[in-house]
Length: 214
Image (tube, rainbow, N blue to C red):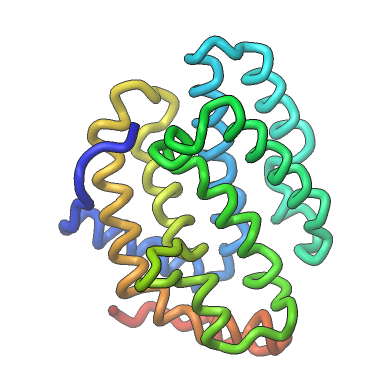
């Protein structure tokens, strides 16, 4: 389960700054792939722990053989098969684990990533800056998680936990939640317009903002 409250400290602020620099340097696709990798591995771990060994192994095998690194290997506009696969696996996990466990472990972030990919990278429906921000930053009123904060959470969480899942949840979740909070409130809003210009108005390279402070 996910424990504790967000940690806002020098180390979480530092991690949030590193996340911003990665996005500014054009690594949004890579960070999305990394977040998906972390979620899928946690889902596989949970399935194995609950006695679904064959499903756990099947999930990992499909991920590693077909989908890992998909966003950096393929044209982002060719994402439909990935969306179908994620949708299928999300439904499978929800059916087996239940909505409460999915939410507690943040596995339902698969829905956020799957839903946001077409908007953030392909600018479907020629979305406005405000609508783009709803998908990248999130919605403060309704607690909707945007892609930026979600990616920062999983990047930080997986780096902290590594391959030793178990007790890692106890101390890694607050750190990841702290990074996510800083990104949601300070980093993502400043990246939103440059990213919108870059992906919705092809050729605009203003998403490379440099290393200004936030």
